[in-house]
Amino acid sequence: MHGWLPPSLRSRIGNVVTWAKRYQRLAPLTRIEVERVRFDLALMQHPELQGVAYQRGTLAGWEVRAYMLVKWNYRCAYCHRFSERFELDHIIPRSRHGSDRVSNLCLACHDCNATKGDRTAAEWGHPEVAAQAQAPLRDAAAVNATRFAICDALRTLGLPLRTWSGGRTRWNRDRFGMAKDHALDALCVGDLVGVHAGRDRTLQIRATGRGGYQRTNVDASGFPRGYLTRQKQVQGYQTGDLVRAEVPSQFKTAGRYTGRVAVRSTGSFRVGKVDGINAKYCRLIQHADGYAYTLIPKESSGMSSPA
Image (cartoon, rainbow, N blue to C red; front, side, top):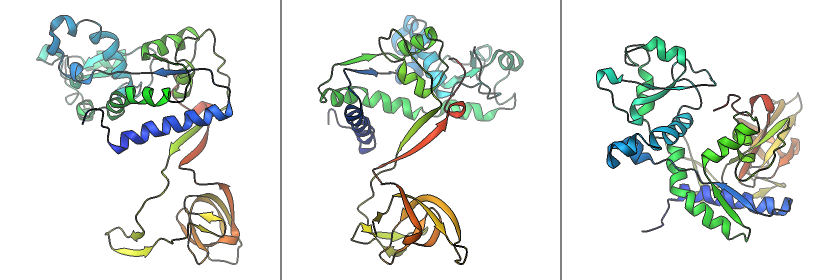
C-alpha cells in the first residue's frame, strides 16, 4: 500500500509529534526546523546504477562521507579513536580489485590507513571490520522511510515548517565552533545567526512504551507464571512508575533501590530486579508516561570530536 509504514516506524513519528506538542506547551514556538537527512542507500551500494559520473560526483564525496561518519560512529574502524580528520579506507584494497561500494569502505585515521597498506582488513587482524561494513545502517534506513511522513505529521501542528540537509547542520556547527554532539546538532539545524551552547547536562529521553495487551506473564521458556491485575493502580502506583524504595534493615530485602516498579494487588512490589518490597516503603519519582528520562553530564553526553 502506498504510504504504508510498519508500526515500529509509526512509533518513531508518534514520538516526534508528541514531544513537539509538549514543547508547544512549554515554550512559545514560532516555527519548526527539521533536518530531513537522506542517505541514498541503493545508489551508494550500487554506484554503477547511474554511471561513472554519478559515482564520482556529489555521491562519492559528501553523501558517502556523511554516511560513513554515522555508520562508524565518528571513530576509526581499527583503533576506535576519534579523529579530526578521517580517510576512507578500502577494506579490500583497490590494488587487489576491491570495489568503491560502501560495503567495502570504512573510516580510518591516517596512521591506521598507512600501516594497513595493501593488506585486507582480515589480513591486518581486523576481520570484524568487514562484517560491520556489510551490516545495514538501520537508523539511516528508518530516517529514509519516515522523513516525509514526519514532516507531514508536524505540519498538523499549525507552525511554519522548514526542512534542511545534514550538510547545513554540519556547516552551522563548524562556523559556531561547536563540538560534535547529538544534542548540539539539534541546535544547529536550519537558518541561524547565533547559538548559545552553554549547558552542564543533557536530558536524554527514551521511549519505553505504555504497556501491552497481554495479561499473562510468562517465564523464559514461555510458560505462564502469573497474570496482570485488571486494576492498573495499586496503592497509588502502577507498573512502569519510577520509584525509590528504602526498606528497613530488619527485612530480607533491606536497602535502597531505584527503578521501575511492577505492582501486585497484594501490595508486594518488584522494584527493578528486587522482588518482595512492600508498597509503603516506596516513593514515587516519575509516573509512567511512556518515556524514561536521564540527565547526562556534559563530558559524557556525546562525541567531542568534530566531524
